[in-house]
Image (cartoon, rainbow, N blue to C red; front, top):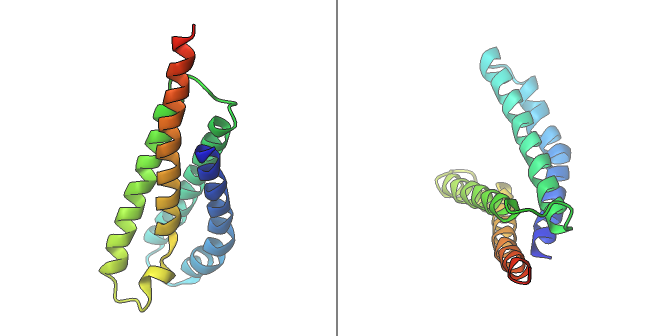
Length: 138
């Protein structure tokens, strides 16, 4: 169930990424006047992140709902969990080194990163336990 929660939170985060991220980051960045190469790179990075969000959310939901259960499922969930934990740590570092007023609430994605990381990590532990119990009964 924790993996499903992580997947749902991440699906909501992905929707927010497209809805809010496009209007508050991508569109203004594309309209701004700065080096065209840097601008295109940032445009690509936005879509790289989009792809990662979609794929990791899909993986969490498929594994959480039992549609993708194999020996590597727990490892995949842990990989996703560690990624988001590191994203959260990195973003908090940027938040606290920023001069932006109310930075923790304006750069709030770290909250989602830590919720997803914790749910995914704990869910992977339960997944590992259930997989080992199944192999013990065979």
